[in-house]
Image (cartoon, rainbow, N blue to C red):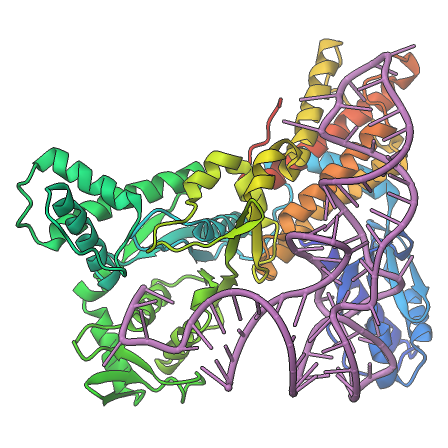
Length: 554
RNA sequence: GCCCCCGUAGCUCAAUGGACAGAGCGCCGGACUUCGAAUCCGUAGGUUGCGCGUUCGAAUCGCGCCGGGGGUGCCA
């Protein structure tokens, strides 16, 4: 549970600056935040910063000269070999090779905890995601939010948060009434009645399936029943399907929160009353409006319709009030792009009620479009022609769904080519990463068959090949990746890291023989067995964080 | 009309305002008589949509266009 190397390097850099100022080698100025970044090229070291370029103006000095003086004052640290100034004013930090080698043992000691760090200090973090109302099978787009939310939750846990996954849904709104009515009409059709099925009702086959089940179980006994009977059955069947689909992706929630609770305990209306008391609510055209424009929104919004029912905005605010009162250290919601316009109103509502919203965060992800036979598949739950998340899992499998859904940044529109996913499933990047893991498992099996003791002490200092060092560096980068993924709410960094880690392993495998029959190679062989076991640990860890399998064989 | 997101290699996408813009797929050419070839190595491929601006420095920030998507419901 240590701090990242980057953070430690930043602290050393600050010490160096202050030391240089104290000695009079640099003029006095406030030390700014030091953005240390990982070196992109090996010639730039393992870590570097360009901050001296920014300091040039304030210090009235040549940036390279500042860099040189910082380097002269840079504190000694066990993990650093050397620090260099580089034109036009960069400072590059090189990790110590002997220290790097020793980290192989640290990785093995940390095991499944490797890569963890302490950002959360044990605080609670709630992640709300999926949150689809039970009106139909989950769409591919919901799958994206689901995978992102679940993975972010894994990441938060690795960053020492106590994580709760929550699914918020509403089974009482207008859409649910239409759902019930849709089933009722299909049921009547089955009884031989001629019905006029409205365009805005749910067209999907699953509606017919539910109607058929009701017919099998009740015959025509429900002919006079009202919509609520059909709605209840539809809700329970569909919700069971949704949970089953999510389960297939390895997504399990800790809590399901029904909007009804907020109506039953009156929180919807007390929230409205408080907003009114604070002057953010007015009546017009028989409806109740939020002064959203005053709160920074583009226009005022209806909170309560003229028929007395609230719109979704009011319960959404009440729901967030409920979350805040539960006392989470962090609240994160994963939403689709269709909520981009709405969510600021929720936050504004919370602020209007006097709540701080710094720890209320949101990730918007753009839509997923599917391509089949070179043409885009238009998706609409209501129209019923769409590819469901279940079908996608059928076609490409859980691991590929998770990997692909993660491998793009949230704000990027995702184009999922179904033909490619089916035809080239064995060339899927997911296999590339898993193959590295399976390959190591195979090496270890091979070694054991030849009588090697995997736990025999090894002299890690014997590791020397550039490919070995690259592998170690990349393994150590996991913690950095977790830190960035959490602090930037960017789970997409994981698949990129996984791909890089697998790549350096495969290169190492080409360059370095682990299990050799040459007696002279026994010692280095032992060290390499430790190294590949560490690599297996790290690969398993990143696969776990992404919610994917780490196979011993493929 | 107005608001939000996106536009980067043939395709799908990366890149906390910093060093030569990087991967995968695809193309082309190589590598298995010893640990898994679902792998590796190499070649080619770019005016970061366009134009102004801010900055020592812009794919990144600002303004204006062009193109795609989403929103602009008393639906969620």
